[in-house]
Amino acid sequence: MSTAPNPIDLQRHLSGVDYPASKEDLVEAAREQDADDDIIEALEAMPDRQYDGPNAVSQAITQR
Image (tube, rainbow, N blue to C red; front, side):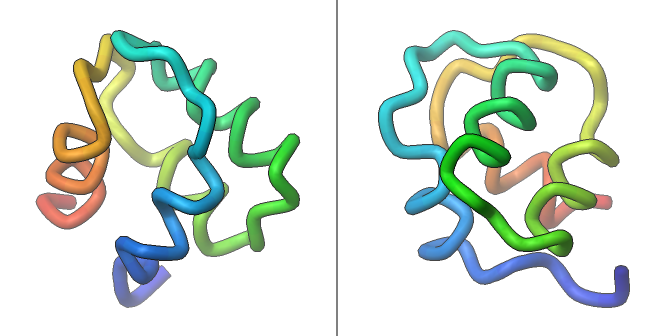
C-alpha cells in the first residue's frame, strides 16, 4: 500500500470499538464494518500492541 487510508474513513470503520483495543480487535471491527482492503491492510501492518484511542491508531498507520 503506497498511502495511508483517509483518517475519516478509517475511524468510520472503527466506530463502536471499545478502547483500549488490540490490533486484532481493530482488524476484526473494520472487517465487520465492511472496510475496504486498504484499511484492512493498514491495520494489519500496525505494531501488535494495545491502542488507547482513535488518535493512536491513526498515528500508527501514518508512521509506517
